[in-house]
Length: 194
Image: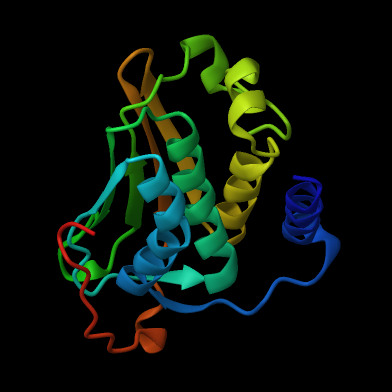
């Protein structure tokens, strides 16, 4: 757990200006999503939690692939931490405009405990935990959502959260597409359910 904390502190320091940001690049959403899901697959299987991935077509975003993958893994880890065995996490992607030229949304929806309205404004703060007792039992450093927020903002995007106690939560990364001159052919697809 100490090594996780050190890694997360280094990531947060880098994202907050501790070192120059990498040059942004066109990132294939399907590949990014699949990589993130693959990184949490063992934990999801052990907890008997299904992760369903929706169709992402050939969407692309603009940013640092490593940071954005870390951001998505953090959202998935958080969903796993607060979800019951036998539940489902859905990963969805969409664009605001046909043709993939508008803002791209990558969302993670869980059937977990939900977050109280009083805690929603604070969930992206460093070390803040909406349910400290559960966090102590399940692990985590308390930095994942702060890292996610900074990674997405450094890419020119934003993160939003919707939640209802007893129902679950949806965290959505709203990210810019690459400039048309930087778009690359991807041809990748992700199955409907992983």
